Amino acid sequence: MPDKKTKKQVMFLDFDNTITNFDILDDMLERFSANDEWIKLEDKWKNGEIGSRQCLDGQMRGIKITRNRLNKYLKTIKLDPNFKKLLKFCDANDIKKIILSDNFGYILKGILKNNGIDGLDVYCNSLKITKDSLEPSFPYTDMKCGSCAHCKTKNLLANTPSGYESIYIGDGLSDVCPSKEADLVFAKSALMKNLKADKVPYVSFDDLGDVYEYLKRRKA
Ligand SMILES: [Mg+2]
Image (cartoon, rainbow, N blue to C red; front, top):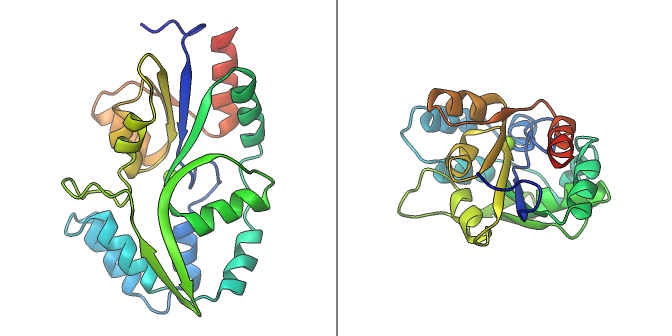
């Protein structure tokens, strides 16, 4: 059992529907896809016919949006109002914080910047914008496994120094695998259902205010 009062900690956060209140990519697909191909890809992924990398690659290429329009859209997106409070708590308690996301750098970092947050460590997919087309790339795929576009587990393990307690906060299917490697997991939605089914311990949360309160109580 780690000594929770003195042990150093590193916190990993998913982005969509964890730091934000909804899934940005799902919303973008509905708003900006040129046709319904993205729904077919989504069904194939859900049925296990393709991995999330192939799904996301096809879906992003099916979006038609200019940089200006995308920037305008990104300006409308707000974060969980408790996120800044949680970051301050981490700083005050010397907890490292890292975002692990299946979203894309341009989108994710743009949203953070628009909400006044800078300088966080982020691991995510990449996006190139040309005229009205998006070209995704996936620097963190585990080609041997292939089930996720971004292998969050690899980045969690690589960024947890020995002797540190790892904390994971997430909601989705790409969070299941890394959660099983973390020491303390905060889960909701699909992640929670999967961990429950696999009998992996977790703390349920609705928003980051719950995570903040839990960690504060634990430190006291
Ligand atoms: Mg998510």
